[in-house]
Image 1 (cartoon, one colour):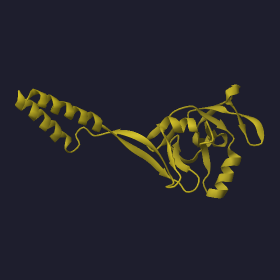
Image 2 (spheres, one colour):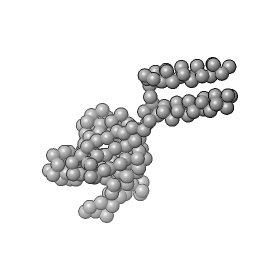
Image 3 (cartoon, one colour):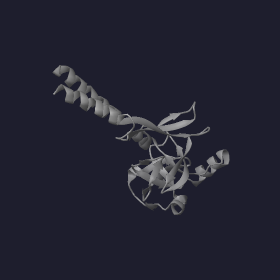
Image 4 (cartoon, one colour):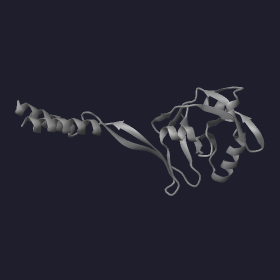
Length: 182
């Protein structure tokens, strides 16, 4: 009998711990290019999800509009190849809070004059991007870009409400079983 009770208690605990956090998705839809809406310092903006870019880069032309700061760096690792030049020097960004749904994206963010690229994208899509989310940040958050469905998503763990309907009953049933065995 004690083994059955111990087993029931263990199963109840395993159930409660595994059900406490269920994976969920934060998801955005796009059409054609993976350009999705995020928030930059609390304001809605469009960003391009770019698997060809290692870095997350904001457009320096947008720093006043979105209230972020940049600082120059002579760091050779921040010189990146680009169209029309041998190397582009990225600037470091501070004060940039990038949110995808309720998820705050954290990690290194850089800045560069993306205006030519942004205007080209705007002519074709009608959306003016203010930044590019690169693969380092996408991998850190497990971004999934589904080209067929036109969605971009990240898994999120949400805690269940401890007093959700049914959970009090489960706890009550479990405590009743334990109490009856004593």
